[in-house]
Length: 247
Image 1: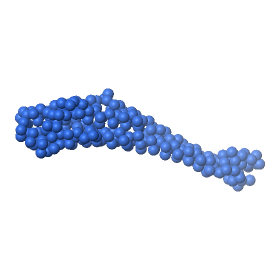
Image 2 (image 1 turned 90 degrees about the vertical axis):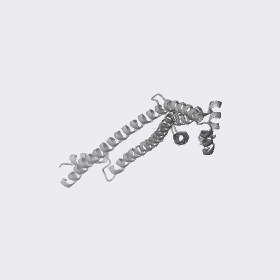
Image 3 (image 1 turned 120 degrees about the horizontal axis):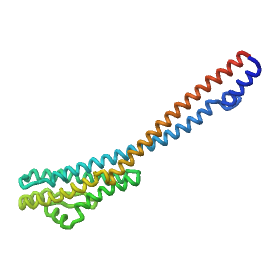
Image 4 (image 1 turned 90 degrees about the horizontal axis):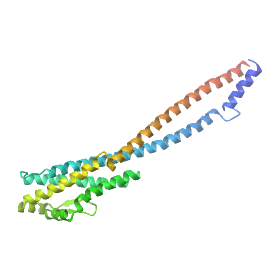
């Protein structure tokens, strides 16, 4: 080993930050690693937020589906339906309808994405409007014990409902059948592929896929950086030591 070899080794070590008299390679690598970790945390935050929004919208979609099913059953009452069956259908509809309206309101509040928030709020308002937009429908529901709160949910006076069934069971079935069919139609529209709810779910799903792809790319970059750093230490660190030892 001649003096030129030693000079070359020392120059390489200094250039890479491996020389004890200059900034160490671990410090340089640490700075790069910190940058990658910061990017990873930022993307993970976005992934978590998007996943939470997807979960929230998924629950809303499920609750609207439940309201649709209960409304469909209510709308399918016939002259042969017993008072007990009618009451059960009415109770199930009440629970499912209120669940969808309440979930829509909650989702609109907690969802960070403006488009998804608006979609959720629109779902709740549309369902409530289906019941409240006609004064004739409201009056008919009041006669059998139903009332609507300011938040769009429904309440049922069980005693008044029972009295209405005893007095005119056919009228009760007619009113419930009509409201069931209306809500069934509205809920179905909210669940169609072209609805705002469906659009928001699609948009968030695409965003989640992009973020996952970015995470994978970042992981690959970190692995490459680690491999490159190890190779540099092995090549130049070892070469420099050997040069000093041989000299």
